[in-house]
Each structure stands twice: as structure tokens, then as C-alpha cells.
Length: 281
Image (cartoon, rainbow, N blue to C red; front, top):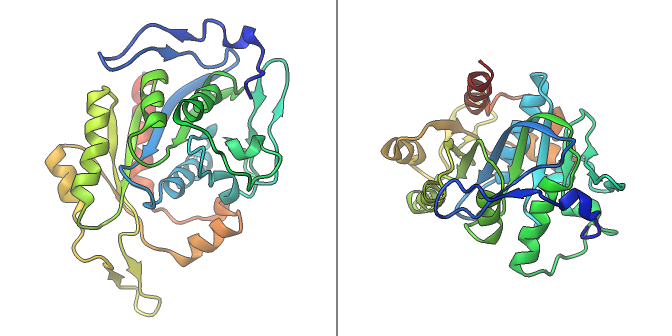
């Protein structure tokens, strides 16, 4: 991946920071035209960032937008598997790297799409991991996109820091689960975004409840839901709750998430669409 022609990387970063904590903003590939960039992140792992990212991409594609997913979780990539393209390989040329296209033409770039074997471990230190993600922005030929979603790794380490510093994000979506530590975990991601001067689009609560298959009742497995209250305290939008859905899990395992048709992320989609429309007026 580091053998991309120098002419494609030259002058790719500008010294225009958004705050005292930012270093520079990197320009995307000259053949790209990307309108909105949204990063999906959390203060911890295991809350379903990849699932939310995928559902948002699928929903936006169904509405007729051109959509891409940049899989920034280099050491634990799961996006290719969920879309059934984990055995595909990204093509390269003198111009750059071409993302893989899913069945419904969502463009995807992940480290697994550049490896000979998709189960090969990535044993890299932080700067290499962050550099790979930056190259997915500067060297990948995404073309024209209405939305590019970033599936972030957990926490607030090297990769989130690099993305916040180097890529002009439209905003972030925080994903959490309904547990006692939700307030602390959400506030870590929230505070990082505020320090880095990144807009916060809102919070989604995943694994919020299960639906009884017999009576349809919503059952809160973790007790009282706290995320909406935390969002209100911080003054940011609450974007809805996602249940534990066995049908969705089966489709993800089969690489067929594009077949999922329930409207779990409608509130989030509405906010993203308003942001795009407000910029085009």
C-alpha cells in the first residue's frame, strides 16, 4: 500500500488546522468528490459501531445516494464480511486504489481487501495503523459520493486522533449500549470530539432491547435505558434505539446485510439528510 506513486501523495495535506489540537487537513484523491463524511465511533469496543455504520450506508443507498464505507478499524475489520465481499481484493493502478463494490454498489475500502488472506493478522504499531487509514482517504479513488462513512476502531487512540486531525469530517455519530457505564463512555468520545472541534451529530443506543417473538413486547435486557438522558444532559440529539435482532445477526453472518429492510436508523438518516440539504441551498 505504501508503493502508491509519489505524485498522488504530493501536496495532499494543507496546514489548515481546525483548532489548536489539529495538525493539518489532508486532501482526498484528485478524482474524488465527497460531499459528507461521518465517523461512527464509541468510547469502547463491542457496542456495534460496524453494524450501525453498515445500516446507515444501506439505508442511504436505498434512498438513492452514492455511498462509501472506509473501514478504519485496521486490526479488527468486519465491514467486508458483513457485505459479503471479504474474498474480494481491491484493484490498484498508477492512479491509486479502487474500492470494492458491493451487490448494491456501496463502495468499500478495508485493509482486508488488500491482504492475500483475509484472516492474516495486522501486527503494526500505532503510527502505521493511522497512516494506513490516512491513505484510504488520500489514495483511494472513491469518485463521486454523497456520503462516506468511517467505521472507527474503539477508543480514542491513534486512529481516531489521526482522522480528527487530518480528514474534514462533517460530524460524528456516537454508538453506545444501555449499561451503567454509558455516561462515562459516551462522555469520553464526546469530550474528544469537542476538544478537536468536530461536530457531534448525535447518539445511537445499540442492543437497547429485545422484541418478544410471541407478543411483540419490548424487553429492556439491561434495565432502564440511560442514553437518551445522557444525550439531553450534553445537549446533543438522541438518534434512536436499536434492538438485538436475530434476523439482522443472521444476515450479517451470511454477508447479506443489504437485504435488511427494517427502519431502525430512520432518525439518524433524517439528520444526515438535513445536513446535506442545508449545504446545497
